[in-house]
Image (cartoon, rainbow, N blue to C red; front, top):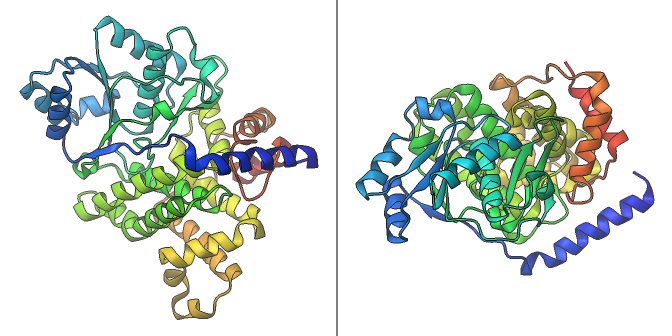
Length: 406
């Protein structure tokens, strides 16, 4: 990256870091059960919430307990079950149309990151009816309070129940871009580990590693606070302790609960401290090829940590020590290990986690002719917003796609 642009990026990021204490961040209020959610809606006079989910979740009956709770409180819910992976603009518009046609008055996002993203963008379109989704791309383009919004995560990874972001894909161009606004943070989050029991292994592994990427990118970036560092360490510690257990036994209640807490903590960390190039590149791959976001993140993470090198070394070493990763990888030798050794141990641990959970080291389907366009999109998303340890422009990002090409 040329020096002038580099200076602009760092000045931009410094301004945000200085403003962090006064920006209107908030945490969603946790709810322990569907009964609590239904009682809350009844107390607030909500008559007809729209449950935004996908066909698989609906077919598996995962929403049935929520529906029973709503019915017990006399709430006439409606269901939009057409959310697609990597939700598109047309997907958002279809949900909005149903919300308005059915006379709905609240939003319940039920699912993983895709359901959350679709519901958030739908809410934005409801309160900003004259602004198309494409004009919401970027930062603070909504600035209107959404209808009452409850998030119900069914995977332990995206952290979308805590964040100010929605990621939407343009139907025609396959351009996948984030919308960031404080109004997108859900008002409440139902954190019930039972919704994650029995998740398929590949979903458990990739969403769990997605949570790890959130924690790591937040921690090694240049806009951290004492709170976001603590949240990132908490998330990484829980992931080290519970992810492989949840992967090996989908019914392990303690592991599922631990991973749900990890995803929540990581979400709170990156909501304030942002992510990095892993996300920018993963979003472009998801938009262009439909590659699952958690999978792309998991594969990309060790490559970027190695690329950052000394720029991230001290922080990565601290995360390794405080999360217990350094001790797990180095044993008694950790007492004499320097930052470089601990940072390398962390990268080795990430690779080991991926390998033991059958996550590949490369991604299928990447075409050489698409790389310049995807790198330009990742550059546009990431710079100047993401406070990464080492700045990279589109040309420099191109090599990262080639590193993960199958």
